[in-house]
Amino acid sequence: MNEVRHLWIARHAFSNEDETGLTGDGEQQATLLGERLAGVPVSAIFHSPLPRAVQTATLIAAHLPDVPLHAAGELDDQFPTPANSAAMIDRFTGPAAVETHELVVTHAFQVAWFVRDALEAPEDRWRGLHSCNAGLTLIRYFPGQKPRLIMFNDISHLPPELRWTGFPPELRPD
Image 1 (cartoon, rainbow, N blue to C red):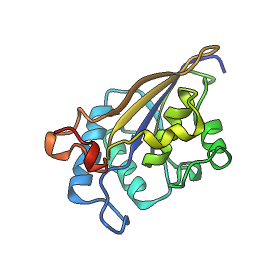
Image 2 (tube, rainbow, N blue to C red):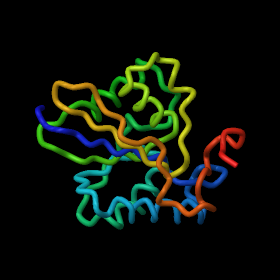
Image 3 (cartoon, helix red, strand yellow):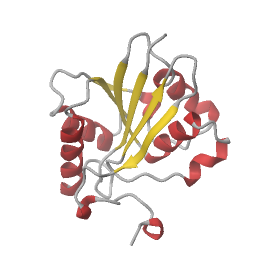
């Protein structure tokens, strides 16, 4: 393990009310995210097993030919704790054997936990981090160094009418 891991983290796109799939806006968000990532040398896409994440990952993968999709139970939508998030952190963070760009498609809580972990923030600090549907985060893990948060919740690939879904209304910019 002596190379840089580029961990791209995306929150799933906007889902319908029963969370069994994406809305039309969500499908558009996922497609635009796939277009954005088309130039990144992603080697694998890992996703939560829940339908909204599976559908998001599948739409992204349409723009990343030959990149395999993998379901990862560690990315499931659950309230993070050190105990139940340890497997997720162990599997997806830290330097890699070879330089790699991996994408994980997961849920708001898990995005926040990845960021909290990278910043070595206290365990309760993840609750103040919110991410939009199809928001993109990048963390780089260097050998022998602390992780670097490169960007968090970037939604520049989305047109204004598709931004801020999934974000608390009271925290949205005017």
